[in-house]
Every structure is written in structure tokens, then in C-alpha cells.
Amino acid sequence: MRTVTVIVGAKWGDEGKGKVASSEAKDADIVIRGTGGANAGHTVIYQGKKLALHLIPGGITYPQTIAILGPGMVIDPKILLDEIQMLKDAGVPDIDSRLKISGRAHLIFPYHKDLDELHERMKSNPVGTTKRGIGPSYADKANRTGIRMYDLLHKKNDLRTKIKEATKLHNQAFRKNGMKDCVAKPKSLTDLYHSYGKLLSSMITNIDPILREALEENKKIVVEGAQAFRLDLDHGDYKMVTSSNPSTSGTLCGCALPPTAVKEVIGIDKAYNSRVGNGVFPTEQPASIDENGCVIPGAEPLVGDVIRESGYEYGTTTKRPRRCGWMDCPILVSGKSIMGYTSLCINHLDTLGKIGLTLGYVKVCVAYQYQNETIDYFPDDVDLTKEVPQPIYETIDGGWIIPPGITSFDELPESAKKFISIVENTTQIPVKFIGIGPENDDLIIRDVN
Ligand code: IMP
Image (cartoon, rainbow, N blue to C red; front, side, top):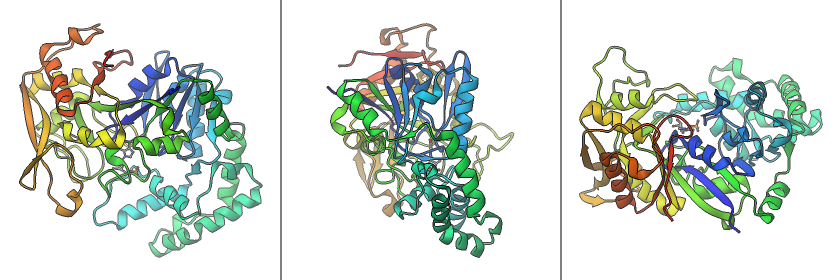
């Protein structure tokens, strides 16, 4: 039986994957993450308390779940230990026995964060990374100088040798670039990481037998994707991407799960779109943000500001104001074959209604004008042509207010229904989930099969 539900971001991250993840995890046996590290961030509510998680799947708050950090992740152990403590302090039960960390997952060291800073500084057109050391850790992994969770369980001397080897070239780069303070010291790093290893040792394991048994017993597995389609290293807007493959197949690889076990792939999107970091964003609206990504105080609000403030679009991880714009359907169309969506979730339908009430209209991009042609997908060669696809919009007059307490699609205001039907007609992907408010339960679930 196919029992795996994959939840993936359909644009540039921050689509609100946590809401559907939480809904799906209610009756899940296993919740698992497979890519990225503490560059992701989502907030879960446990017994009325807001908990900000960057590494651990949010489904851990359901006490029947086993939560797994998959082998494709890059893990900062200090952040992980803080998260574990936060969950314990909040009263989430049995963390030590329910949290499993793949021994094959790679570690993030302080020098990865310093290298992230250095690489960005050296680029004429920086990516705008989260500076969490994600790219440098994946680069070490690809260079075969990465250090894995398993290494924390090995003899201290072996760990020291590995850190020494891994940092040889990095230390040269720090010295050459006037970053002497960042030069890694293998002895003290070994002591520190060895102590992290002691605290995490009971959770570091081979996750394969756990997953094999779960698949054999038809247990429900929920994959909580991180980042999103357009940030995928191979399929996104290279080079303005992350350093892993958060597409569906990349996420499955990072979780050590087979594609043949997948039952559903839910692409998560928002009723408007947003992006942090740099890169092409065809439906972006002008905003009062300076070149460093800071809001200009006192400036006249522009359309992008109205969207950002209505949805409170500020990074969970970096607190950066997000760039904001209208819903982009061609990107969803491009994602159909690569991501394999069986359905979509459109979050923030309530927020879009409020934006419409403020501006007097809302827009949906249904196609692009690109190289003198009308196309319904995201072009592959934008980096080469340097031409930003020009959105072709459908406009809906006015906005809407979602009546409190509604649970079905039929109860939505007519213009809100019209918005959803434009997305469905343009993309030919059913919208199964609709987010209509900030709480986890503010979610309409439709029978679209
Ligand atoms: P990195 O993943 O920190 O290397 O950053 C690469 C790009 O991905 C930057 O534009 C980041 O802002 C973006 N990014 C990484 N993780 C997330 C996320 O979870 N949400 C939104 N953007 C992200």
C-alpha cells in the first residue's frame, strides 16, 4: 500500500507548510524531514504555546508520532539541542524516545556559517542566504570532507582528525581573507561537538529499519518538506537557490523513502506569493524596501507593502521583510511534472481578501509574456536571457471577508471561490486544502478525488 504523504513548497518557501503538515500528522505514525537544516522555520502551537522549530518536524507535537531527521539534512547540533529543550519545557512527551536522527545526516559547524558569510561577500550578486552554513556544509559533503552525526559517536581522536582535515582549506581561506577570528580550532571544536554527541547519542541511529518496518506495516508517513520547488538546486532559479533538492524526489531521497510508497504529493502555496533572498520574482510588487532588504521607515505604502503587512511577511529564521507579489500560476504549472502534485493547498485566502479590500482588487498571474510569446510555464533560460517573464493577470474586483467558523468551500464568499477556480482552471491541479486563518484548524479540506 502507498502510505506516504509528501508536503512540499510550491514557490520559494514560507508557504505555510506547517498547517497541512499538522493536519496530516494528527493520525500519522511517522513524521520526517529530509532536506536543508536550520534555514527553514515554522511555528507550531502546542497547548496554546507557540513553538518555533527549525529542524524538528512539527508533527512531533502529536504524541503517537516518531519524528525523524533524515539523512539528507544538515544539522546544527546546538540548535537541535535547544529545540529539544524547548519541546521538553513545553511539555511535549517522550521526546528522547520519539526523536530519531539519521546517523548519515551531516553536521553544521561554526566554520560553515563563517564560510557562508565569506562566499556571499565574494559574490558580485549574492544569493541572500540565511547564513546558517547550509551551502558550505553540503559542499563539504560533496567534497567528501563532511562530518556526519555518526562521527559524534566515534572515538574523540577520530573526530578530531576529521575536523582537522575538513578545516585545512577553510582555514587557509579565512586567513587569506582577513577572517583570522574564524580560523577553526580542531581541539576546542572536538570537545564541543563530542559533548553534543553525548547528549544526542541515544537518538542518533540507522533510520532505515524504522522506515522499512513502517512501510511493511502500512503505517502513515508524513514527509514535511523544507524550502520549495523554485529553491531546488537543480530545478529552481539557479544560482538563487538553496544547496539541496527540496523538490519531491529530492526530499524523498533525503528521507530515504522510495517513490513507489507515495500516495499523495501536496504542493503548498499562498494566495499571494513571497520570496526572501535575491532572484527573479515575476509577480513581485514594488515595496518600500532598501537594497539591504530593510523596510524604509515612513515611506508611502506601495502594493508590495500592503501585501507584506497584511500577511506579516517577515522571515521566521532571519526576520527579513519578504518580497511580496501576486499568485503566480505558471510556476505551479512548471511544478506539475517535476513535483508531481496530486493536489494543492492555498493558504492565506483570508489575507488575500483583506488585501483586496485595501486595494480594491486582487490579481492572479495566469500566463507570461516572454520572448514575444505567451507561455503558461516558467521559462528555463531566464538566467541566460536576463529577461523577466512579464505576468499576464486576471483581476478580481474588491476583496472579501471569510465568515468565522466556516468549514466548507460552499460557504466561502463568491470572489474567494472565483480566485480558487482561476487557480484550478489555469493549473489543472485540484485545490484540496484552503487556509482561511492563522490557526491550524482554519483549514477547509475538500474532497477533490
Ligand atoms: P540558504 O538555504 O541559506 O543557502 O539560502 C539560499 C536561498 O534559499 C536564499 O534565498 C534563502 O533566503 C532561501 N531559503 C532557504 N531556506 C528557506 C526557507 O525555509 N524559506 C524561504 N527561503 C529559504
